[in-house]
Image (cartoon, rainbow, N blue to C red):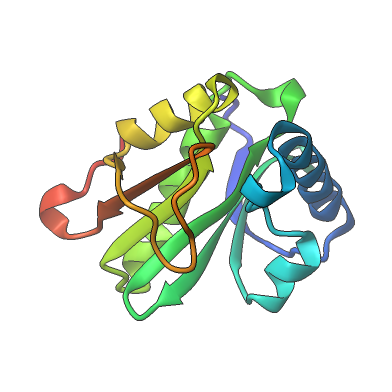
Length: 163
């Protein structure tokens, strides 16, 4: 990861962020049948009033991730994506750490996510597990789905793992 990598809040409406969100949306739609695909379209992220974090290097957006408060004290990670050409550089880890910090700063007590159960999602599941996330039952409006893996972690100080 380069020293000039900037991890910060970003705008869902920024053209380059939107382009990466659309790439993520297309990849998720291609990877899962519609009934098992829980990816949010960029406009839905905007409507949900999520906090979006991006990783930029030399002004180019390389990765994104969003935090959505789904219940008092409970956040959900959405739209974690690293551009294919930037994978393997620690960008997802940096974004995930920033999102965990954002959740802690907002006094959230629990952070959850849904990701795929297929082998293509194994690197994502490993990243989340390395940051203290453990498999859990479906949360919020999710229902059991063999193509989904649900994960959660406490944000209490005693379980503050940051990989």
